[in-house]
Picture 1 (spheres, rainbow, N blue to C red):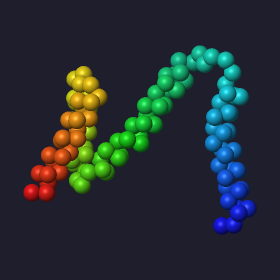
Picture 2: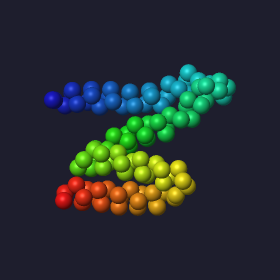
Picture 3: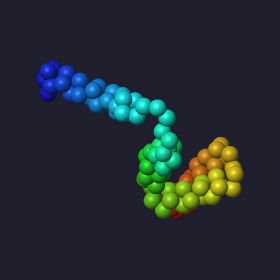
Picture 4: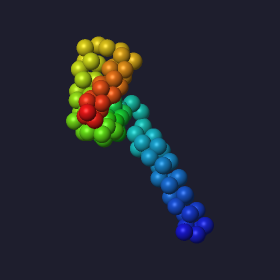
Length: 104
C-alpha cells in the first residue's frame, strides 16, 4: 500500500464516519413525533451494547456453558435489584469457581 492509497482510505473513512453523524441532522428537522420511531431510537444504544457484550460474555470463559450460566445468574441477580458492584462481583466469583471445578 502506497501513500496515495493510504490517503484515499483515510479520506473515505473520515467522510463515512462524518456522514453517519451529519445526515440525520440534515434529513430529520424538528422533533420526532412518531411514537414507534421514538421508542426504536430510545432502545438503539441498549441493543448495540447487548449485541457487543453478550457474545463476549460467553466466549471469554474456557467453557461456553460457564459463561452462559454466569450470564443467567447475573441477569437473575440484577432482576432482583442487586447493585452493579454486587452483580459484577457475583459473576466474577461464579466464573472463578466454575472454571476451577472444570479443571478438576
